[in-house]
Image 1 (cartoon, rainbow, N blue to C red):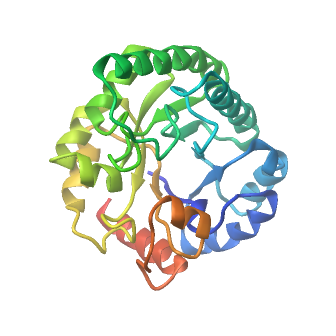
Image 2 (cartoon, rainbow, N blue to C red):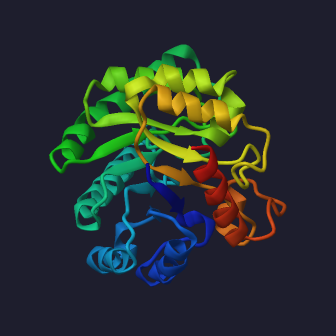
Length: 280
């Protein structure tokens, strides 16, 4: 099992210059780095790959950035913007040695609105149609699309594991898997361990976040039960810390981080990794 750190904890946007973070990630004991790439043009993929190699790190996953203008259920222009973005990230992933594109790629984050059942179904069918086109594009490159349910305050579209599994079933392609995030599912699932077991072999990516979006282990989650559930479904993918602080202002605003959740960014990474290694 590999333990990774999401770069949103330290910077936004991630650029080629952000490789300066890699030495301390390695020093702390991380195996992998989850790059949060907001635009493929922000990095020289070959240079980033070299820096990963030089520091004995890998990039197992890219954290997709689905902000304004990227919405697979939005206007025609927003849908195309999202398709273009997803393809541009998939195109650079082989150079990075990365196999998973994760995140809520079905919608712009923060889009929450009550809709009639007929409208929801139309949006659902639209997203399914796009993913049916994107899945083979990913598969041809040996890549996976990991669909992430978000909490109700960040999307009205896919909030639970069961909804995520329904999307995966409707797309019906081996390249599409589930991305599970303990922060979001702490809000939406009645029993997180049971939800992980229901995900079963569709579980393709895992974010380990504190219940307050802070340090894993310094919260109220039953991490022993989560660990047992991961073992039960034979999950052997990356375990990635994706926590946020007030230091990265644009992410703090987007994620509603209004107070310090830990003494520092470094503390979240170091203490979170120490805890996760002990329990998982």
